[in-house]
Amino acid sequence: NNIGQQAPDFSIKDKDGRLVKLSDFRGKVVFLNLWATWCGPCVAEMPEMEIVYNAYKDRKFEMMAVSVDNGWEEVNEFYKEHKLTLPSYLDPGHQVSQLYKVGKFPETFLIDANGYVVKHTWVDRWAEPRNMQYIENLIRQAETKEQTSLQK
Image 1: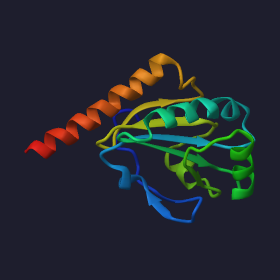
Image 2 (image 1 turned 90 degrees about the vertical axis):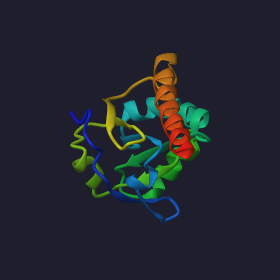
Image 3 (image 1 turned 60 degrees about the vertical axis):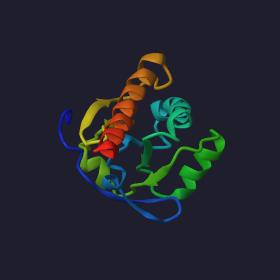
Image 4 (image 1 turned 30 degrees about the vertical axis):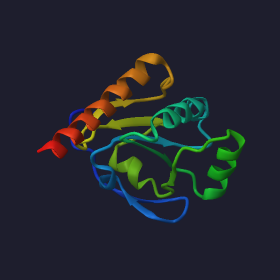
């Protein structure tokens, strides 16, 4: 369990081939989800993640859906089929999964604006009010923190 620990940093490519680092998103709440197109629970969870993404994408929030599929073809096909727009990343070598000790998919790590893991869970219903409220509160903390540092 990684709760309360600094989230391990990593670099990964997005679908445009840009290299992105987890630490690039410091100051934002990061929703890090490790998944695969062949995993049933992942398929069930994705539409709810899409709702969360659309609710918070213009705030201090970043969603990273990291697929362990072998190539973009499967992932792009999956996104088309399920009408997804949330940011996707590919980790065919499972580096990120190994770093986060993920054995079964999907697993989600919520990382606060300071880069600490605050929640770690298996499949969940992210669009449920309790989860939305939890994420909302984390984002508010991040936004408040930013305003405080601007006033200094």
